[in-house]
Amino acid sequence: STEGLVTGYYEPLLRGSRARTKGFEQPVRGVPEDLLTIDLSALFPELKDKRVRGRLEGNKVVPYWSRAEIAARGDKLPSRTLLYVDDAVELFFLQVQGSGRVSLPDGTLARLNYADQNGYPYQSIGRVLVDRGELKLEEASMQGIQAWARANPGRLQELLNANPSYVFFREVPNSKEGPVGALGVPLTAERSIAVDPRSVPLGAPVFLATTRPNSSKPLNRLVLAQDTGGAIKGAVRADFFWGFGKEAGEQAGRMKQSGRMWVLLPPEAALK
Image 1 (cartoon, rainbow, N blue to C red):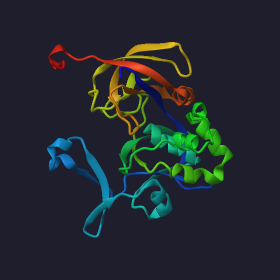
Image 2: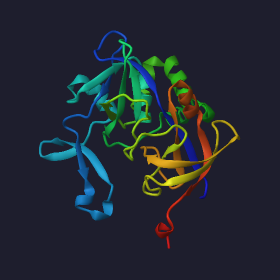
Image 3: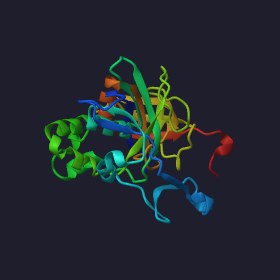
């Protein structure tokens, strides 16, 4: 197909604390000490870029804990808690976005970047709610999921556990630049996209032809492939970075558009 899906992501702002106190009880976890990352290409070259995560159980490597198991283990998980935030839904979306900033009680900002993941594939909780008949497809945006969570606090953890993937973070120095993507450089609002690197090489310029969120208004521009994501799979698939803050989140949460992509390569790199 020449057309595919274009979604959006952003850098959220959360409220948090460095200590667990009343109102700030949701832990933002660093990489656990017992998380193993195994590069399969060392043994099987045909599996280049394939890695699995696991842990040791006796003398065997077994899958790492799922989201539900991590939640159940709580402070028994051998990982440093970087911060505590005030909202489980916002923490979940921080993991989906891969980076964010946290406003602390003293007025300073802490900045978090993706560090690692527990090895499970991403599952959309919006799709879960649609399949259960609790949201219509057009309501399954980030805003729609947040509204459902506010209305169903007692069922929230069970819904979050439907996505077994769990992201761990690292704290990085604060700056005015965008978050650092998979390419290792800061992302630029409305000029950076996440791609599937099996089809689009990181660093490549891409001409993106799509439309603005919930609109037929064209969004056609040159962007750079600078990031990846667990849900970004396929050749004609992009996640458009909207920037930082609430307004960027409003745009990203509603963006689910069809689009086309042209990858621009030097002539000598063209497929024969």
